[in-house]
Image (cartoon, rainbow, N blue to C red):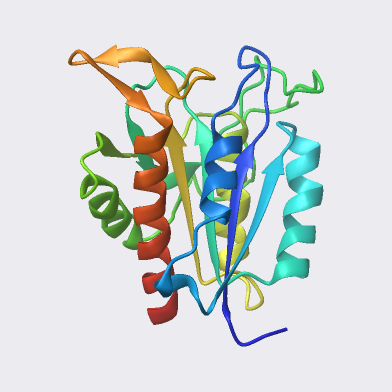
Length: 214
């Protein structure tokens, strides 16, 4: 293992109701970045299938393989026309909406303890980084009750382990058309993939800086 700072960037694949997930091209674009600030940073990427089984199996495998010090995760919030920086994961899972393998959760909670777990104060700095690009970005206290929230919970759990990441963050992005523009208008403007990538880059750079200090 090299001495480079290691950052794992993840997204999700398609799922019922969302045959196109813009986090896939977003993660691919971020992995191709070449910046002086990333010269001593190892970026790894992964696209999770939208299943509980995949998250439970693949997240520990990825953490063991890459041993990332920072974990930057992206997911799709199809009904939200702006970027959401999640501040916490809720101890909730839907028993109504099946995952991409048509599996349903058997109970409405993830664990037996806390009602929620916080990502940490670094999320406020990620929000400021996103806003600096001119994009509409907001803090969120509700990551839903589907796979994005589920992954967030498991990631926060991992940061509590000695061998886990120092920092983790989850970012929800709006639904974009395959051509790169949003399928929703807000204030007469369409959000583009380029704008989301710019915001993602700003948050990645801030994540690198914060992880170094953590």
